Structure formats: C-alpha cells, structure tokens
Length: 155
Image 1 (cartoon, helix red, strand yellow):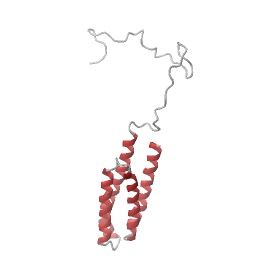
Image 2: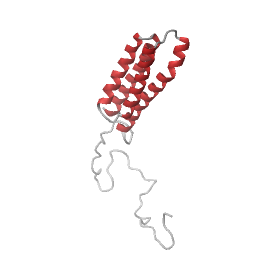
Image 3: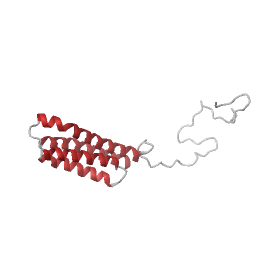
Image 4: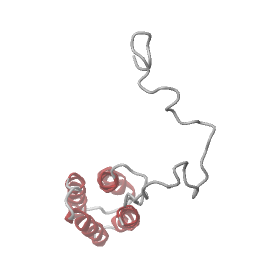
C-alpha cells in the first residue's frame, strides 16, 4: 500500500507541493529569478528506450520473414512456375538457412552487410528461376527500407 496512512504521515507536506494551477511560461524565470540548469539533449533522435535493440529486431524480423517466405514458396513455384530444378530448390533452402542464421547474429555489426549480400545472392538466384528474382526484388526493397530506418534511428 502506498500513500499516507493514519500511522504513517505523508513525507511531503501540502505546503511543499507545487501548485498545480500555477504554470510558468516558457522562458520566464521562476520565483528565484533563475531558470535552473540548462537541459542537455539526451542524444537520442527517437523516442525509443533502446534504439539499437529496436533496429536489431527490425533486421532480424525482416530476415526471419524472408526465410519463411523462401521456404513456403518452394512448393507453389514448383507446381505453378514450371521447371524449378534441384539446384534452384537447394539455393532457396540455403538462402533461407543463411537468413535465419543472420537473423540470430544481428548483434554483430557485420550482419547488416551480410544481410545486404544475402539480398544480392537472392537476386542472382533469379538466374535459376525467374520467381527467385521477383522475390529478390521484393526483399531487396524491404531490406533497403530497413537500412533506411536503421540510419534514421541510429544516426
């Protein structure tokens, strides 16, 4: 239980509390004539408590979604897309595994560069099947947006 109780008095007397109806206009000094110490900027450009973790989560989520889409795309591409040979399936699975591994390594600074290289490899896998190129374009754009958000948040 918090607050004053009959056996425990309030630690702050009502006279010490500020008047909630009185507001000091910005730039106006208080009753002592000084405006107080200047407030230093916190250095954070975003309102996030931990912007590094938020950006890591964005990168990991993007790579995780990419891995899931790559794995789930194998069967529909095989059925609808025509010839989707063993090399294309192996490349798709390898790219999905690499995306999952990179998603787990987003704490490392080099993981962002490796994620960019992964997008390039997916675009190159388009030589094996045209649908992989389409997925590569989509995820390259998503990754470019994630890099943009990272640059905006972390500066």
